[in-house]
Image (cartoon, rainbow, N blue to C red; front, side, top):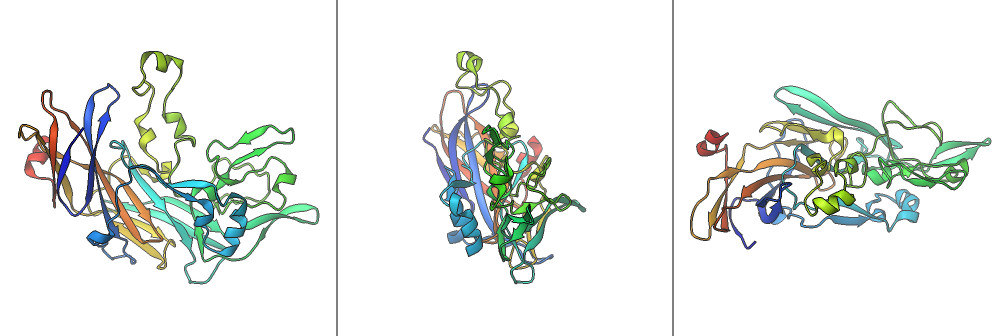
Length: 373
C-alpha cells in the first residue's frame, strides 16, 4: 500500500496497512508528539522542539538488563542477567487500543538527593476535578537473602539514588522446586526474587519493589498480588497473554490468518492494568508522578489539540475527514519527557486506492468532525 502523508503538524506520523478481525483491509495511522514533563505542581509541559521529538518505533526497542542498572551495586546484582534483553518499548505500528495506556519507563529517585535504602513512589491521575491514585509502591536498593543465625534474612547491600521500576526487577521469574520441577510465575516470568528452595534463595536477590502494605518478610512468602513495576507488560505475561485468544488447530484450519474468534482487543494494551484507563483522558487532565525525577513531582497535562486526517484517493477524491484518538502516553522519567500517541483506522474506498493522507492539528475538533460524533 503506497501512501504518503502531507503532515501539517509538528508531530511524527506514519501510515501502515491493517486487516481487521473480519478480514477487511484498512489504512492505519499513528501520530506521536513529545512534551517536556513539568517539574512542579502547577507547571505546564512544553512541546519539545522538532529536533527532540521522538520517532515512531516500527519495531520494539530492546536493552540488556545490565544497561538499566543505575549504580555499581545494582550492576553487580544484575551481573548473572546482564545480557538478558528487555523490551522497553513495544512496536508502535499497532491499530487503535480499546483502553488508554499509561506506559512508564521510570525510576524511583531519592527525594533529598542522597542515596536511600528505600523510596516510595506513586502515580496520580486527575480528571474533571477528581483525583485518582493509580499506583503506589516502595522501591528498594539491592538486597540479598543471607544467613543470620541459621535463618535467611534480607540484608541491604548499600543505598541507591535511582532504582528502576520495570518488571525484570519486580517479583517473579522461573525456578526449580525441591524435586527439580520447573516453577514459573506466569504473571512475571522475567522477574526476580522467586525461589523454590531455601538453598536457591541463599545469597540471591530480593525484588527491588514491593507493595506498600505487603512487605516480603521470608524467602518463601506467598505474594498473591505483588508490585510488578510500572513499565509495559510483555505479551507473554499473564493476564495479557490470556487475551490473545486460541491459536489452536481449529484456528489454523478454519480462520488463519485472521485473529481467533476469542481474541480480546485489550491484548493491544501494554500497560499494567492499574495504568489502563477505560476512557481516554480529556484536555486538561493531569498525570502526576511522585519521586521519579530530580524534582519531587513530574507532571503532564493533556493538551487541547485534535488531529484530523483526510484521505485523498489516487483519482483526487477527498474522503470524509476523521479525527485521530489518543490512546497511549509513553513517559520516560530519565529524559523527563512524555510522548502522546494518536491512532485511527481509515476504511479503503471500493474502487480506488488512498494515495495521500492530509494530517492537520486543531485546538479543538473541527465542526465537521464534531457533527459526525
